[in-house]
Length: 637
Image (cartoon, rainbow, N blue to C red):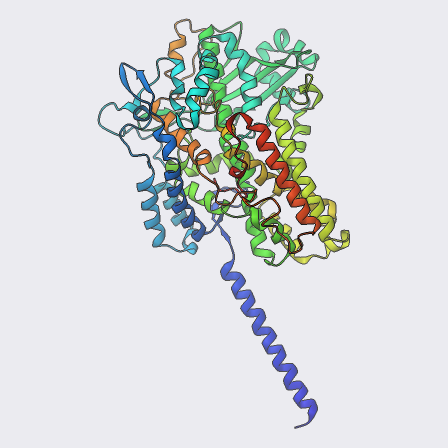
């Protein structure tokens, strides 16, 4: 045989080996590909994709059981005695009756058994998916009490101060806050002046975990809707305030699309709310002056002039309910959970683990997909007690909110510009002291931006290097694809500047979410549930001039003992359990670095980022013995 023939054989063999290697690599990639649930087939075409990893879901279910044990001391600390509706018991009994501390054990075990008999592929079938979602949800409108007859969890409070029933003795929470805040918080339900005074500060100072960046200055696009909605009050009350540039709004009428649901024999209702606030020109303080409360059939407008003290307090309580539900599902879950997860899915599917993008983002991309899936499948067990009693109704809400919304709309600086929120308008002697959560969110943003800038400048020599990174291009294209990530508004990766924007946003979402695990984020404001009610328990709207309606009647609309208990179970998952992996390593911020060379500028930037978060925790939670290692590296709850 001639030598050229040997050469051809060798070349052919190399070609065959290369083809086999390519096919094997492609097959492995397909096997390990992260799929997403068929929510588009259910009509949810506006929202981002919902990735599904069954192994991560199973792991999350088990870990949630372990977290329940971690929270045992906090629930055991619900030992203070209260007298409600003539019954005297400790707080735990009123909130949970005689159920064990682990209220969700049976539901978790049932789901684990169901998942043992299915594959990940099965969930790509819409009928199988809907069956599992229904099994994990409440049956809406089903009027069936948990037990025959009244239980301790059926009771409505008869004293506003008894909302302190949710404060555990663990960590000294009850003792500290009874002295500092119980009288103050309770006065919101008894004193119309206090209800007005405390309304905005409660949002502006305590709404960080709920990402309550939703206040807008009334101008341009919002003006027509405000004038139309409040036409009866515009000329005499509102227009003079608007002309001075002191009229602000919180528009939560999105909730008009859904009616109340029935859970355990009681209504759970999220009212539509449209709140107008006036700003004091000198002090920059805001207070509500006009509120619309509405449902599908009717709407009522409340002002100081057309209400009694009791009906005005009711209107503000209903508005706070809409604020809470917005914060839970849209401010928190949509912004930080829903958009981040498909970006992580497409990253896993298009970018090799050895790529520097994966080295940067993988440490913050664990657990989220599994938790989102577990939330949908264990909805009635781990979800808070809102009117969205089914996973499918939550998807409807998310899909509605996502309509016309783009990726960068969630970023705080973009949001502030669209809402017309400026530092000068909310600073009185100190930056952002009239809207402190904005200051905190911008702090996380700036820290994330610096880290992203160093990463891009170190990793990519110039714009051409960004454009020529085919894996990066595939990631963004796949994320934008309606049949894949369905994340709208992502830019073409043609420059370092555009890549920095995307990476800053992703790093920020995970970093900002970490504040939810701090004790300060839970309370005392949020855990005094009348400040942040997850639902009203009656769907009828009180007429503004109803003189028979009393302040005591308001308590029959606010969460009862069982609903308060469900809310605290939800909160305890966040606060009283350790993160799977802390953002700040226990052995120091210069350990567990992302890149091989310790002196790599990207590692130095990572250390700086961690230091910034640690500094924030110490400053933010200084009254509660700050725990810097409680800040998780990923979104895991």
